[in-house]
Image 1: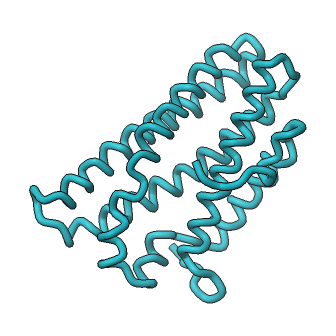
Image 2: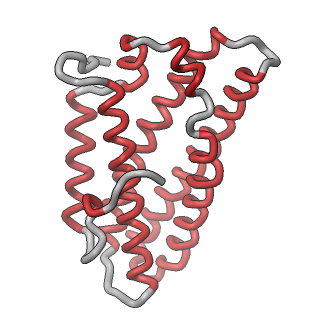
Length: 193
């Protein structure tokens, strides 16, 4: 992997990606609420949001896996930090599973059209349950150990920021933004859960 180092700070780029994931998730949620309320929100918008969420979550999962892998040599089996890493493994597995189900449901919805809406909505609710209650609930659980162990070189490897990753993220964000319904532009939402 070719890392971007000059001109880019890995942590800044990672923070930006996670903020924009939150913005697209909020836009997605706003579109869902509008559709439930009777608005004509296109499948293309939901598809663009799922494409962004998939790419962003894949990167987040990869980053968290690298965090785990870099921290593991610094913990002792059976201690609190070891339990924290085991919990991170569990959260990543459940998140990956929920993401796969969301992507599959989006594909079915795209093929079925409105006949697939109810199943898609159910899959979205299941994904959001995992996103909030499992993934985000422990998102800073390794922060103290990261601060003790990581230097900028490790952060660069964890982030995995490349020219391609930046271009892909920008294209997918623009696609979701371009299809967003009124009052659901991702850029109009602040980051955070």
